[in-house]
Amino acid sequence: MSHELEQLRDAALAEVAATTDEQGLEAARVRYLGRAGSISAWAERLKSLGKEEKPVVGKLLNDARTSVTAAITERTERLRSEKEARELASIDISLPGTMAEVGSLHPLTQMLDRSISIFRRMGFALAEGPDV
Image (tube, rainbow, N blue to C red):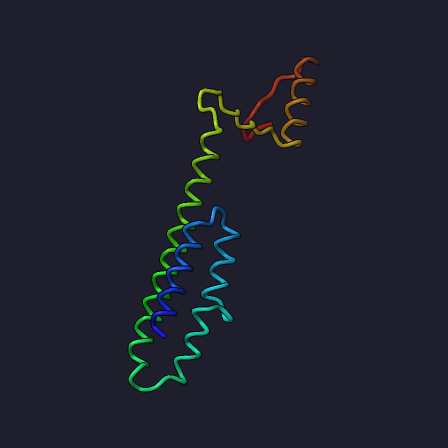
């Protein structure tokens, strides 16, 4: 029985290493580690095994689960870093950057400034202070 579990682990690791996209990795994760996955099915079989076989198969089951999980995590990170590197390679850093948009004055401030300029052209002066 342990031999079948080792073959299952090797097949899962080979499939994870052969995947080229994140959807394939997710499909492999579900196929092997999902609720109805192959490795998860061994956890159900473990209940029906004898007392002598349980520790051996349990250890192999845990080793298979941790190694497949680690391989999937590593492959996911590698695929994401390769995708990010491809996206960054298409950016030309010698091009000028985009200018930030400059804000504008509030409409009431614009109206006040326009009215002051109109009154100045008419000959009035702007005085500030408490006295009128």
